[in-house]
Amino acid sequence: MKILITGGNNAKALKLMKAFPTHFVLLADYGDVPGIVSEHYAFSSLGILNKDSIAHILLNFCITESIDSIIPLHSFEVEPIAKSAVLFGEYGIDVLTPHADLVADFLSTEKNTFPNFAVFVKGECIFASGGEIFVKKEEGFSGVFGYNSADDDFKLFTI
Image 1 (tube, one colour):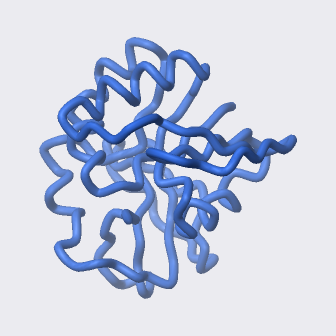
Image 2 (cartoon, one colour):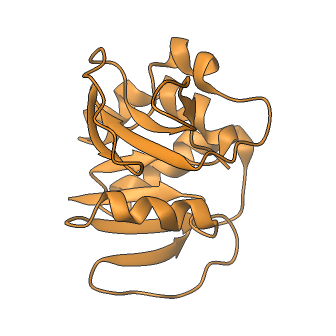
């Protein structure tokens, strides 16, 4: 499986790589990106940032690079990608965000610096950096969520 994580120039994207040890991870960002390629990951540029056509840029990139799943880390990407999840799905690309109508509930207005994060895919927790075991959530619950402790509210793990 090939996973695209945006915000690839940020340390949070690098932290996420440990959640996918058996997958190929493509770390992408806008503008200049280091030209590093290895057996398990690579860096790539998404070109010049154009916030008006984020979903279009990322869909084209995903199709060109044969991406199976996308994790948008930039906060300005989350809503447009969530709203385009059906279109991405038509090309066989899983979008790891909550449903578009729920995204606002999980976005934080302040810069989040959570010590832990959990990755949910269709309600199932596939990785928790703190080692917690989370009860299965509703099927539409997907994305990478930051948290302080298992009892805290989840917020999207964004940059």
